[in-house]
Length: 533
Image (cartoon, rainbow, N blue to C red; front, side, top):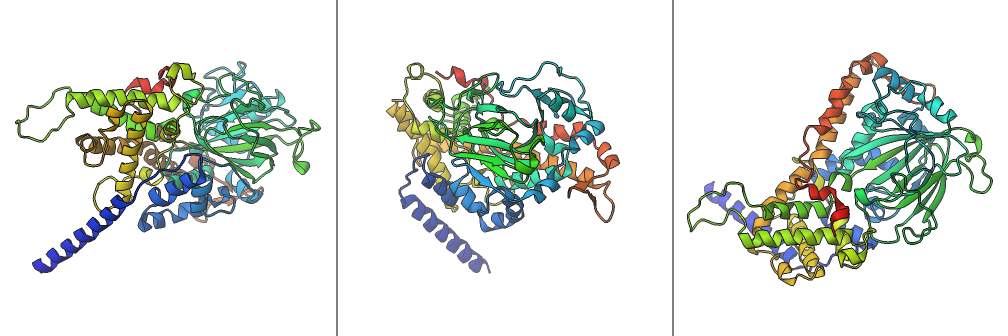
């Protein structure tokens, strides 16, 4: 038996070594970020999970199909995720089951919602103002149950954040989105009056968004950015009172999609794509939507976060280098023959210089003047701003973790991509000596791997906590349902008992996602991209 076990171990090790060798022998060329081949490579070669993990995600994939325009989950990831908008028309029935406008009144009666305060973060926007809040609704004031009618009468847009922790149907759907994308996800509600020639002026988000039209209609135009793929949250344009023109060719290209959404329609807007909305017909100024003309527009925005929660290659690599560059507070005394447990002084200095280079490359295309950065448009900057692949963000315990080097070729592949990015960044920044440090098997790479693994573990925290939060909310909400299930409403939705919802400690539920902030960078400089020059 012992010999048999030894033979099996030897055979497994041999196969693992052959697999590892075959992937090492393959030249690794990362395609241009702007091309669809880049995304296909990401999905097929790096983001593909093991069969066991994909099987566990099958239910989530089926649940999110209304968002994907009839495409398979893999086709959407390959052809649209983060690079191309998509219009879907799955029909109004599923949207009605997801949300009804009258749910806002119930939420305001059940829980102490406040303007610009706590998890609800209700706000009333002035249309076309660059998302400025109307000062008549003061910070901390209670949200009245009739807020929708009041805001519409004042020709204002009402916004309610974090709908996923107030509505059981929205929570259940959001859980599927989180489980499929392995990413923190938030759902906001936007209610605008009919007849607005400009509901929101052109702006961009640092996250990808699915817009679900629940009531009325809204006209959308979606513009690819004119420079640089993706963006950084603090550098996104068209917000904080900045009103942009859709004809500004220095910021945005001509629209790739112009469409009117009616109930049940879904629009996917990739991260950093500019978009503008109206609830009036552009030619006549009348309300859009045919039979729905005159109805207010109510839409859910399902935001899948990456840059907002520091889950891009820039932060993964930069924060790991930060830790290499920072000497331990109390270096242990080790025998001279012991292997190094901390980076030598020269490597710490090199890591610090490379962090500076990564930051400058990341902002070189995003409105920071080239004369300040000394860098031109950067392909590496695009790659640094790219979201971490879906498989790398899978919760711990979901195979494969992709951390340990060895028999899993995908683990080797993502590590090689990380090293390639560091080399390319050093070369583009004009520091070839830094580039020479980061090769497979180098001492610098050996010291980087465990630090990189730990930073990656921390980047998974927001998604994992979001799942826990949604599961807690749904479990508490289900306690008040009758044995036969919740009752159907006249408009096709689901009626959840007010008493069961009122008993939920909504503050405690919301705080679950705030319990662990390990994903946040430890160096506050990461929060100030405008200073990376």
